[in-house]
Image (cartoon, rainbow, N blue to C red; front, side, top):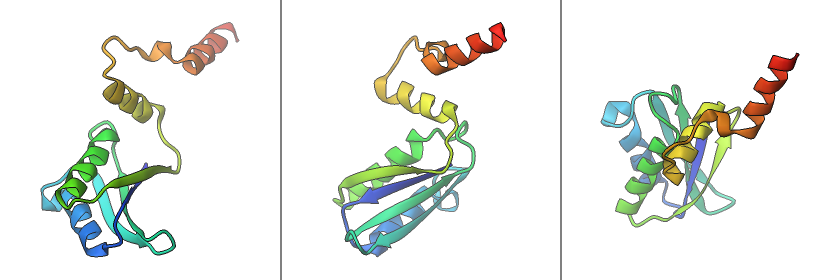
Length: 122
């Protein structure tokens, strides 16, 4: 699963430092690969993240760590984008985390309910 995080700076050196901070060999997160790149046309930088196992490192964890590291340099978060296919479980984890849901169950997701109901009837 891929996640790109856009930062409000054109300073590629800082973006690379932030990427290294979340990389496991530098004390960061396991199952994460990260790199800093420059988006010339927008005048910003981007941290590209590959998350090998979202169950060990939910999508919100590298996301928040990049924001924390960027804040250390006084760099604002600009936006993000998901790359490729994303497991439903990764999105559910993010929703539970950001909304601080206490009694949330996967059965509350309408599409899953309809899919399971259709399978039972078929």
